[in-house]
Image (cartoon, rainbow, N blue to C red):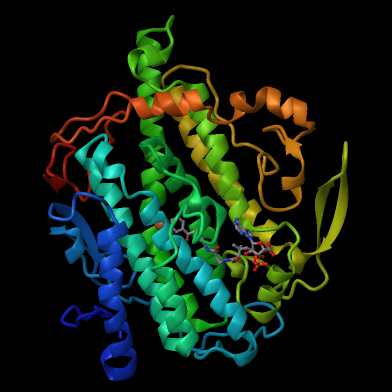
Length: 470
Ligand code: BYC
Ligand code: FE
Ligand code: FE
C-alpha cells in the first residue's frame, strides 16, 4: 500500500490500476493538466534541468528522492498517507463513528465545495508565480521556486483524485474547471481573494510563501481531521510537502532582513535604498499587506458554513486531539464587533466561530516567523522590530472589512486611514523600487545585492552548485 508505483503512467499508492474506469478518466485529465502547465506554469524554463525532490514513499522520514530533471517530466502523482486502523470521526455530531470511506450523501455538496476551494488555490499559486524565474536572485532560489511550483501542481492532483474518485460526473466537471479559471482574470478568476493578487517580485513571493502557504498549512491541518478519510489522508501527505514552502518564505525574508542589516551597519547615515537594499520600513509594509490578505483566507469570523462543516465532521480544528472536548456545543467565543466609533463584544457559539479559532492559531504561528526576523536584526546589534499587523487590519472579508483599523487593531476613520495608508501598506513608489531590484542572477554561486545567501544549500549541496542547469 505505502510504496509508490512509478511504472504507472500516473504514479500512485492507491492501486489505481485496479479501477480501470477511474484510471482512464484520470489519464484523460493528465494531458489537459500538462497543457495547462505548459501554458500557465513557470515561463521559459521548461527545457532546463532542475534539482527537484520527488516523493518515493509517504512516511515522514526519507520520503524524497533528489535528482535533476526538466519540470514537465516531473512525476505528478497521487499519494495518500497510510490509513490508520479503525479511524473514527474525531469531532462534531458524528463523533466516534467509523470514519467514512465514501462520501455520505448528505455531505456531498459541502465536501465537494471544500475540496474544490482547496484545489483551486494550488494552480492559482503556480499562475501567480509564473514569471518569477526571469528575475531569480540566485540559482538556489530559482530551484526553490520550481520545487514549490511542481508541488503545488501535485496538490492539484491530490484534490482532482478525490473529485474523480468520489464525486462522479460533477467531480469530473469541477476538475475541468480547475484548469480553466485563471488567477487575476476579471471574467474567470480563482475563488479566493489572495489567489488573484499579482506576485510581481521575489519579495512578494517570499511573503506569499511565508503567509499564504501558511494558510495552506492550517487549512490542511483542519481538513486532515476530516471524517471523510480519503480527504484526511491526502491532506496529511500534502502537509509534509508544505513545510518546505514555508521554509522558503520565512528564510527568504530572513535573508533580505540580514542583507538590510549589513547595509545599514556599513552605511549608518544613508538610506539603505541608496545601496540597493530594502529598508526595514518597506519590508514591514509588505508584511502588513501579505499578512492581512492571508488573514482574509480564513473567511468570516462568524460563519454558518464553518458551523456546518464542524457539526458534520467535515472540517475540524487544527490538531483536534489537543482539545479536551470535541463537540463544541456548549462553548462560546467572544468576538469584538465594530460599530461606528467603538467595538462591542458578541458572544458567539463556538461552532460558528471555527474560522476564527483557526485564524488565531495561524496568527500565533506567523508570530514565530516575525520573532525569527527580529532575532536576525538583534544579532546584528540593530534595534528595528518587525510587528505582525493586528488581525483586524486591512481586511476585505468578514466583520472588520466594513471599517478601517490601524496595524495595532484600533478603529480609525476613513480620513485617518487615507492619511496613513502609504505608511502602512506598500505604496506605488515602494513597488517601483522593489521592482527595480529584480534583475536576474543566474550565475552559479552568485546572489543579488538585496538578499543574503542562505545559511546552507539544498540536500547537503553547497550554495555554489548548479541547482538549475541553464
Ligand atoms: N475570498 O461563511 P464564510 C493553500 C466566501 S491555501 C473570497 O466565512 P467559509 C495554498 C466563502 O467562500 C488553503 N471569498 O465562508 C496556499 C463564502 O462564499 P459562498 C486553501 C471568500 O466557507 C498557497 C462566503 O464568502 N484551502 O492551500 O466559512 C499556495 C461566506 O464566507 C473568502 C481552503 O481554503 C476569501 N478570502 O470560509 C498554494 C480550505 N473567504 O459559498 C496553496 C477550504 C470567504 O457563500 N475552504 N469567502 O459563495 C474553506 O474551508 C472555506 O471555504 C474558507 C471560507 C475557510 C475559505
Ligand atoms: Fe499546496
Ligand atoms: Fe504550498
